[in-house]
Image (cartoon, rainbow, N blue to C red):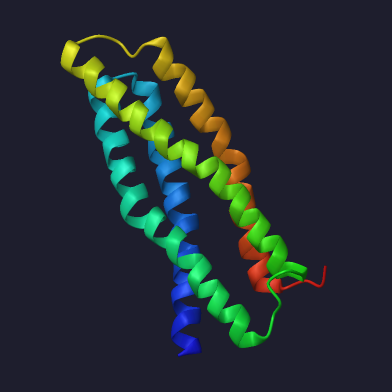
Length: 154
């Protein structure tokens, strides 16, 4: 059973890392077009991907991680496990607003497309926040993966 849970945990980490990178890549690549139709489509896909992949993995990671820590005898409140948990909360503090922002970006782009107008200042302001929030969250996910792999004594 522990091997299956470990496999699920590693796949979940890969999904979080990969989906995060993929979502960022496609959103950033859509921006130079300034085309509300393209951006509405990409942002809509990003919202679905975050819901289907990121949210599911984000919910399962603490469950599988808790089981693995318990099974291995690692205390949850000390060492690398505690640091991984703190970083996980840190990631969530950035990811939850990003989900809301992605929905807003999608909706603004849909309205601009339907009305045949350019994306407004609110869109661009939200996009800058979305872009900035990605860096600390992605760095923290990388740090969590590093902690899981190397389990340093801290």
